[in-house]
Length: 392
Image (cartoon, rainbow, N blue to C red; front, top):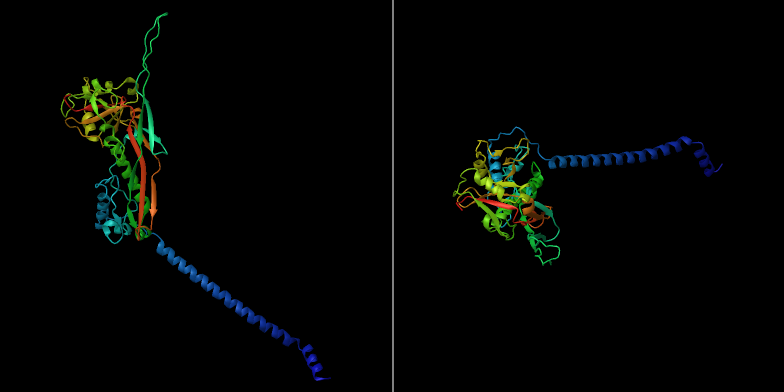
């Protein structure tokens, strides 16, 4: 037997060596696979750990419900909430006070873990003529109201007589322009990220409230220049000499005073019967405090409070709207209005309050540009009468 033949015979006769070689190769491949799996598991665990740390870092801090209301940071925070409202709208724009965490009074206390969960802003609430006016939603820049305030001529005719031409009604057009309310507050991005509550929602609520109060004031006393025209800014004449484009008034007979309940009765019946059924008194709280003390000749109060929650008070059976923008009682003041405001005053608006979030123009701050378009004016001068606190 040759050497090659002997080698082949040796291989055929040694299956154990072949199995051992195959097992060695398998164990090497398995070890590599196991090492690869271990590395992947370790990498996945490291990623999960990093994710948990980032989640904890980004999570909003837990707020303590039992914070001391007399604590210095709470006092400063409350002072901040009260501070922005008294400056008013300059040119119908909110003041641009910046919020940031560097200055405690400008927002630093908002990220304090002792801040209460609910922010109760100190806001002056006021009712608006919008509650009783005719409110229309428009998509144009103005809203036109066509008014027919003249009568048709007429006459009596016999069977054979000729009929003369009678007067034809004249139609007037009242155009209500939509004006723009705007606000541009800003807050730092860090404050938005780290604050203990929804700063963006809070700012939007404050802007909406400010807009509501600004338009409520304009519906009463706005001059019509870049804002709605209030009904009190139209010319007023004694009701006996009333003419279109003016509001009729009834004098109380006393300068700066009522002198009894008779002027209220006169005011009610100065309004036409077709408007009186939907009549509403409008006055501020100080005036209401005086009026609600009035009694008739039998000693009964003319004023009656609502019997159910949310029901308005009534004066001589008519609804009372407390609008703080009405003037106080003073000599010559038109402190009380009575009328059908659904017919007499129209509010035209685009109903959406738009808030544009701009994180680029004032980095690292985020600007919130809010706008609302609204207009208003008297559309029926017969439907509103005023009470003038004057002798005549």
